[in-house]
Image (cartoon, rainbow, N blue to C red; front, side, top):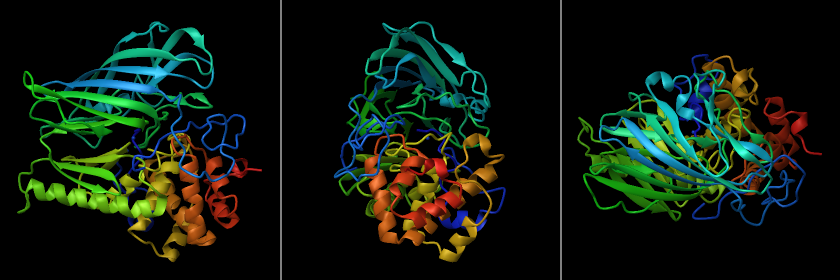
Length: 498
């Protein structure tokens, strides 16, 4: 969620033509179905034949319909309040957590405290914790970052699997100067994504204690949660955020409150500013885009720019629905900020930092790959970024000879975040070679068969945290495609079922 979902916004064609270059493309910090139901928790314990089950990994049967949310998923309610100067967010977060494994603690990821982001003046602090089962929490450093990367909350009793606890965290988020990041303030707008403590649980595995990485890529993991947001801001601001938004409250004392809900969100994004918005309905999804005032519109007003962004988003969504199936959410909001760099995706919302050309399709594709089908962004970054980059080929075809050239280049697509020595090597392997690998696998297996296998994977692992073994299972009947992924280093023999 954002998790800084890598360097989102690389057009596949650009990735192919620059994949051998260590400088890569300008990196970006990255983080659902037309009202269809959402997540089924993933795990790696005893096998289960039911793809909706949280009791074990998927065994390959294609579900008759997309997997539904895990009924025991976390329930998260967050109240944000933005200061009048737009530089500080205070909030409270209620979390009802029901683990599928025994645990004696809760672990939260404090994403804004990572290297790079904290250096820009961003900081997330837990001020107070309440709950019947909690005691005093403490911060833990995350290896590649400053202190405060994780907040660990010991429990006064050990929870059994299936036993619930509720905790309320009060927090303060300081927003630094606007930069290409998930949190900040610039030109009268404030935005925060992963701006509240993020529950770091992987169903079937347990708490994730992964360190921050020194690269501009994601390292967080979180389960999809039944999420409700409340955002209080100065009355002149418009809010665009994760979730199905209700009409804002009437202004009171110069402020008003915006609310939204999302039945299955791994993380959330909020942007507040003087947005001019445009809206459309496409495939049953309400798409809303917002733009900020510009000193020089080049003859085009804010209304025209907002409508153009809405239309471009709707076109991307339509193209991707044709390939991957129903959009995972009821709504999609796209606030465009004045900071340049690319895009950062969150469930049902995209922070667009700069022009949409070259990044919009990639970010919309993340609604399927990360938003709906989750993954460990530290352990398996290719599972969302390579698929989102591959999805760009829906509107930007790439010639097979160019694909073959990139697939043949060095680099292990399946490496973890700590194994890449530089941003250039990360982009080259995960985005460029990863996308080309999937294109080559589609060519090897046949487009229709490969598309059907990917759609089966998407529907079966919807709302779970998928693993490379799940991808291998999806391709079990397409050995030519699976061999391409093995050769590229995305899968190894341990990932192959049976």
